[in-house]
Structure formats: structure tokens, C-alpha cells
Image (cartoon, rainbow, N blue to C red; front, top):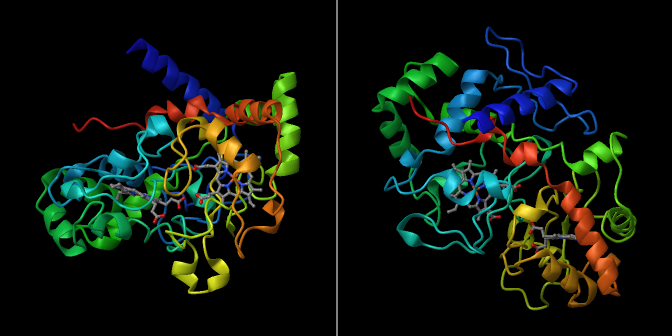
Length: 342
Ligand code: HEC
Ligand code: HEC
């Protein structure tokens, strides 16, 4: 318990060090979105969903509650675990209700307020509608929105919490989506060693610095600082005969075959296994692949046509650098942990 209190106080201290920008109109229980100084303004600005502490807390309850699934067996957190940067617990493909497997690896969830699109193929373009997919997919929570709303309206705890958060007597699907968006858009990770080095508070070791230089030369055209993604879709040559056509599913354009959204690399140490189908289990495998496993095809990214040709020593330096993106105040932030239902 003491440890938790200390961690909590430490997090409050870190949070209070950041520049505060109030994005939502100030309400009675004004709750702030802590804009990290080194990031640009977020894409999602809570325009139609004013951020409040009660709304965030409600989203957090819902995120951890199996009530959202057909048979009350799984919750969002079953596939998105805080200790793993809100990616899945070590498994390539996630298991939904009735133990049905999906076809993609659950991505890490962080800094989503800056994302312009969601899912590996960008098939969803708004953070407020994103949960419709997991809530209703037979490979995930397997529910219908109509049934969910009936279930929540029969639940006295949620009746009370929705009233406190949004002032409504009857829960509807829009308020459910708003509450989830308040939680997911507040998952901010911006306090890794990397950030402290950039802010001049500490410095890299020689090996980390070597990895950083290589990263800027070979990786940052896609994994662009400081969010470590440029939000584009790229074919990185995982295969030449695509089992999953990726972005082409959304655009129907063969020029998009095998392209997937560039994932952030923040907290990448914890988000294994890697790639859209979780085929690579550790960073050594990722670096071996990126160095000399790239397969050619017509849509392969031009920057990868000749491979990245990194020596083992260079690969190791990059891995050491990637670990400076681990943010323990995010992974251990009690604000994001499973709440205790009172
Ligand atoms: C059965 C496992 C599973 C459950 C349960 C689940 N997800 Fe996911 N989630 C995934 C997978 C897999 C993807 C990637 C899907 C794709 O790209 O097609 C994903 C993608 C996402 C994304 C997009 C992230 C990005 O950067 O593109 C968000 C946000 C998200 N989930 C939030 C949620 C929320 C909120 C819930 C609960 C309502 C939830 N998930 C429940 C497996 C799950
Ligand atoms: C041409 C753009 C591009 C370049 C250059 C690039 N990447 Fe990636 N990276 C991607 C894309 C796109 C994915 C997702 C691919 C997929 O799942 O099919 C990815 C996935 C990853 C992953 C897995 C992340 C996860 O959550 O699954 C890691 C780690 C990674 N890249 C590290 C690197 C490193 C290190 C370099 C430089 C040596 C690099 N990348 C260069 C585009 C790029």
C-alpha cells in the first residue's frame, strides 16, 4: 500500500510539472488534459464531449468491466493490459467471447488523442466510434449496442455513474462511447528517459546515443519523433504474398496492398509480440527482420527497397535506445489501473 501511495504521489508530482492546457470548457469538477510540452496539439479536442473527472472515471470503470461482453467473460482490459502498454498479454492474436480468435494483434493504447485514425488499417477514423468495433465484433466482446444499453440501464451502479457524469436519467449508446473516449484519450505517455534527455534533464549512455543516431537515420522517417509514428500506412516487407491486405481493405486500392499503420514505439519494450499479427516475439527478431528479412513486392516502401543492413552491434544499440522509450510512470500510473468498485 505504501508503495502505491509513493508511486501515486510521484505521478502527481510528474503530472504537476507539465504545462497544463484546459481543452474542455471548465465545468464544476474541471479535469485537465495534461498537454505534454513536447507534443503538438492533440487531434481530438473533446469538442462535443467535455472532459470531466466523472466522465473519465466512468470510462475507466467501463474499460475494466466484463459487463460489456455478451457472456460477461471479458473486458477491454482482457486484450489491452496496462502492464503491457495496453497491448495484449504476450499473445499474438487476441481471444474474444467463446474463445474466438481475431486475426490481428491488439495494439498498444497510448497518446490516442493525437491519432487521426484507428486500427492497423485505419478502418476507423474517430476515437468516439472506435469502441463500436470491439463491442460488437464476434471475435471480441460480441454484444449488440441495443442489448448493452438495456443491460447498463438495469444496473444501478452505472445508472448512478452516468447520471453523475453526464446528467442523464437514461443511458444511451452515445454516452457510453463518450465515456470510453474520455478514458482512452487520456492515456498519455510522455515521460520516458528519452523525454528527459530531450528536455536536458539527463543524458543518454554512449550506446543509447549511438542507437538514437542510427534510429534517426534509418527509422524516424516512419517512426517520427516525438510520438514515434507519422500515422502513415506502409508496407514494410513482412511478406510478399499477403494473408492480410491491410490498408487495401479500407481503400480498395491495390496500391495500398500490405500496408499497415506505423505503430508508435513508445513503451515498445512492453508491447510484445510485435507487428499486426504478432508474428515477432522480441525486439531482436524485429531488428533482424528490419535489417535483412524484408521481402520485396510492388508496394514495398521505397525507403526499404535495399534493406536496412544493420550490423549486430548496430541492432543492439537501436534496441538499447528503444528501451529509453519505456515510461514507468505510464505503466504504473494508478489513474489508469483497474478501479475498485465501491
Ligand atoms: C478480444 C480482444 C480485444 C478486446 C476485448 C478489445 N480490443 Fe481493442 N483492439 C483489439 C485488436 C485486435 C485491435 C486491432 C484491430 C485491427 O487493427 O483490426 C484493437 C484496436 C483497438 C484500438 C485502436 C488503437 C489504434 O491505435 O489504432 C483502440 C482504441 C481499442 N482497441 C480500444 C478498445 C476498447 C475501448 C475496448 C473495449 C470496449 C477494446 N478495445 C476491446 C483487441 C481487443
Ligand atoms: C518505411 C517505414 C518504416 C521504417 C523505415 C521502419 N519502420 Fe518499424 N514499422 C513500420 C510499420 C508500418 C510497422 C507495422 C508493420 C506491420 O505490423 O505489418 C512497423 C513495426 C515496427 C515495430 C513493431 C511495433 C509493434 O507494436 O508491433 C518495431 C519495434 C519497429 N517497427 C521498429 C523499427 C525500427 C527500430 C526501425 C529502424 C531500424 C524501423 N522500425 C523502421 C514502419 C517502418
